[in-house]
Length: 367
Image (cartoon, rainbow, N blue to C red; front, side, top):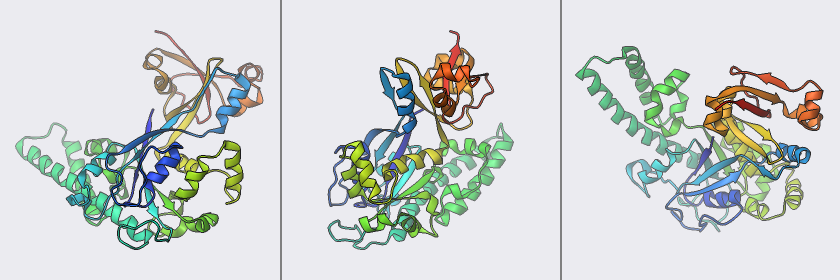
């Protein structure tokens, strides 16, 4: 289940530098002028998970395969993008294709990197991007409502209940977007989300914020998280220093840990950004472990064992019989499958079992 996160923000806020640090190599151009990025850059990044190494130490497999996340570096938006300013709607279309959005906001001072509006005001920058996304969604919604009204006038809808609900939802969304609020500010049920899926609204996507700060600001991580309040809750803000992270990414793993300790951090901001994307999208990781490979797999929280099997191969889902489950903690405590089995920690689960984060799974299936 591939996950994609789009990196958005004003020009020159550190998007491409962040992207390069995430990929640990210079894929995107990073330069001190607006619209340095025109076509979106894409990079596939391994999701850090210390559990993989612990499992591999027991199994000693030929390969260790982490799960991945795709980051998409989308060119800088400016005020008026929804009306075609800057590079306009081409950028907005790129955002529609990702699962979640990380909005990079600049908070560091300094004249070495030019701000597109010649000032540093993270809250104002945040509101510019949010407004442009809301305006783009408003245009999408108004076009859809016009077609919807024409369809209803033309003939009696086959599903009148769904149409009545859509009328209410369209009105609620229009009110929110007209006020510059994101579509996700409207309370939606699971059924509502299905009804609205074909709209592909930008502001319905989960969003969190990467706040690009100075070295001094990074040392006070908790306080820096609060710089965007009350517009954004601190839990949705990940402070980072694009320059420092790009330096850390070039270091060997053991030196990275020492470097991070100097800032009072136990993990890099890049790892926090990946973890926050997983959290907002409601994702978990399960594992398969054997002599050929130890592998991590991504799954949406709450999905059942046959669907987890389908992540590995569609034949596994279609022919699902049962799942043999060992929790990660029990697998480590038993020093592997045999020990866990001997300890009575291997469980047989059927089609109604919801796979849990950290489960080590062996699927039984027929073809």
